[in-house]
Amino acid sequence: MDAQEPLNIPGMSEEDLAKLKDQIAAASAAAQDMVEQFLDAQPDAVRHMMDPLNLGPAYMAMSRQLLKQPERLMETQIAFWQGFAQLMDTHSRKAAGEDVSPVVEPERGDKRFRGDAWQKHAPFDFLKQAYLMASEAVMGLVSDVSGLDSRDQAKVRFFTKQLLDAISPSNFLFTNPEVLEATIADKGQNLVRGMQNFMEDVERGNGLPLVKMVDLDAFEVGENLATTPGKVVFQNRIFQLIQYSPTTKTVYETPLVIFPPWINKYYILDLSAEKSFVRWAVAQGFTVFIVSWVNPDSRYRDVTLDDYVREGYLEAFGAVKAATGSPDMHVIGYCVAGTALAAVLALLHARGEAEQIKSATFFTAQVDFSEAGDLALFTDDKQIAMIDSLMADKGYLDKRAMALTFNMLRSNDLIWSYVVNNYLMGREPMAFDLLYWNCDSTNMPRALHNTYLRDMYRDNKLVEPGAITLDGTPIDLSLVKTPTYIQAGREDHIAPPQSVYKMRTHFSGPVRFMLAGSGHIAGVVNPPDAKKYQHWTYDGDHDSYDDFVAKATEHAGSWWPDWLAWLKPQSGKKVTARQPGDGKLDVIEDAPGAYVKVKGD
Image 1 (cartoon, helix red, strand yellow):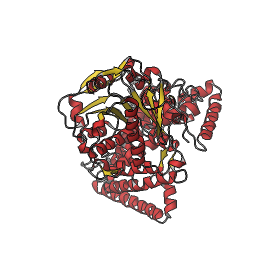
Image 2 (cartoon, rainbow, N blue to C red):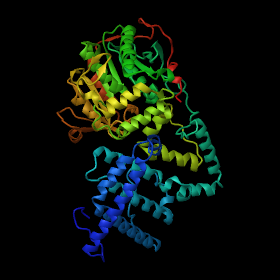
Image 3 (spheres, rainbow, N blue to C red):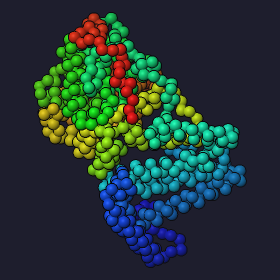
Image 4 (cartoon, helix red, strand yellow):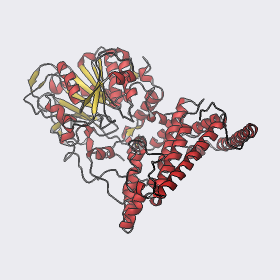
């Protein structure tokens, strides 16, 4: 029913309907006033405990807007009950032996109800469809409330989805037929094992369950992960620099240095041998370096973005020059390290030192946060204050808080599926190198994290000329003329592709934008031999992400060869392969080095 059409309820006159609407609005307004008065009467500390994510104002604003259109509430409820009646009818006909189609089905990619038990047992099929129908009704109601601020709208939509995911019947023993079948077959031993798994996760999480996503005993860094041969040739308090041993007799003159995100371990780009971007790049004839960031503890509470720029990026540039004798280099920045790399390029251009960077490649990195996706919902003033309070004692944000935030972006896949598998089914998670890396996360220095949340996500200062000063120098991204390759992931929930695309509009040099299939990790770690996913390119003019998607050509498989074809012509002549330690830097230890083995809290 169109929201502008008059609402009709059989048996009710227009006058009675108008009175009912007024009564509902008055009752709802009175109830909301009581809630607001109660909250206002509480001390700040109590309000913070009751609403640590500062969701109350957004939901109150939504309620106020809905009160102005009570017919919308009534329409939603009537539509739901009509659908429910249809569901009752189809199940009655199904029970009579008639072949009927479901009233509602899970969205594409929803794995919660794919088991046969959800279809073959009528009560659970009914429960599944009723849940999906109710979820659709609620999300439809909260997702398009006229007059609501766009940020409040996004916050309400995101956190309502979190609640609906949490109460899914698939997450509970007596409403999940697959769990019930397993419990009967296993005489309840699955629940015993599940409780043991839960207690182990609580112990590992220091009092809060840190859900295990992978067999933690199946992998070891330096043994079956991060095994590409190389040496640590430089280190300071911020990072270790690894130079990899060549596998070709000659290498390109221009070396390649990679800056992975400091919120994770570097070996996402050096997983098992067949998935390693590092190993592949070495095999293409490049002298490859990678930064292994420190896993910070309390001593790093006051370490800032300036420190990471000076002691991280700039010292890494100097170390690569010393190791190779090359006056310039190619650089790669992944995720947050790509954001910082863009700022560093602007700094170098402002200082007249940009010639040392031959090209820059960005993996799923953002500089313009105006469309930064759901992570931006955690960056209003009160939420930043809450996050800062979590860091106050230790001086850093521990890996549990970081992991939960990222996992919430795909809660059914990254939270609830493991709750069901580990605690209800009593199973151990599988051995999967990428998930092991995902669990081996790092801490985040307090000052650095606050700067990133406030200046980038909340205030979007990086795209404002002069709004950010690095190492005493105001920066302007529009000065950057370095040849640039930008990779985005089409299904990226962390750095949405439309946000990544915006980078190309802020640089003034030549830019190649490429869209990869899959998301933030699998979209990057996609070796050619895997023959997985796809990528899209377009060499003509395009002025928006949607315009690029409409014009781009799809190619099967990995995008790595496309990047290689772009990079090789800029890499100079071939020279004798460089061994770690041949230059002015001495070997400190074997790769993967000591820093990557330090565990987060």
